[in-house]
Image (cartoon, rainbow, N blue to C red; front, top):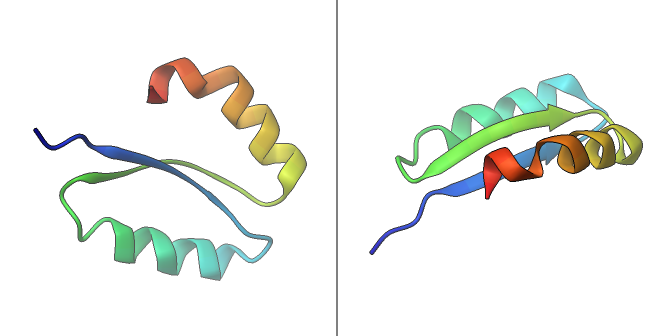
Length: 54
């Protein structure tokens, strides 16, 4: 059984996040669940949305 992988991209450069997002979207079993520009933003997004991803 294949399980989808949910990813939260975190990088302070939007262009880097966009590049990784495009690369990961090529894989059918990877879901880019969100993006964050720093650790604080990533923590907030993962804390409020983790139930959506799991």
